[in-house]
Length: 146
Image (cartoon, rainbow, N blue to C red; front, side, top):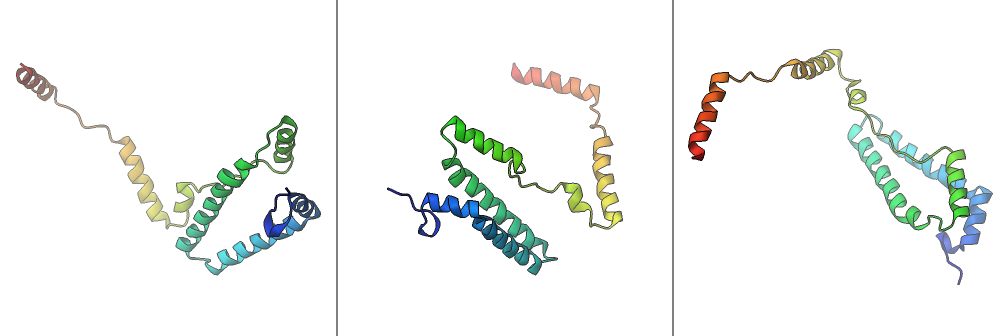
């Protein structure tokens, strides 16, 4: 029995489509649609982070579902996959922003205040404990335990 994939095509037909460049064309169309959507929401950080979340979820869904189910079951196929990953740009990765990048657009005063507050909390030593208080607390603890 021939397995059918996208659009009712057999796996062999899908492979020919992939090799002929049709797959690349479809990926370019999808990328263009996503770029256009992002452009429509330029300046709206809430909408854009939502778009990024959806892309991350799609990445996870494909990786944990379809990709894992299609992993090779023999050495030759595994070698071919690893060779492709190595030569075609490595493992797909979705990078997350660092906090400093989020702060880059804030006015300098605000960033300085945030940095100073963070630095002050690091520089502030823990509160000193009065030695006599500690001794009294230990004595009370001993009395209560007896």
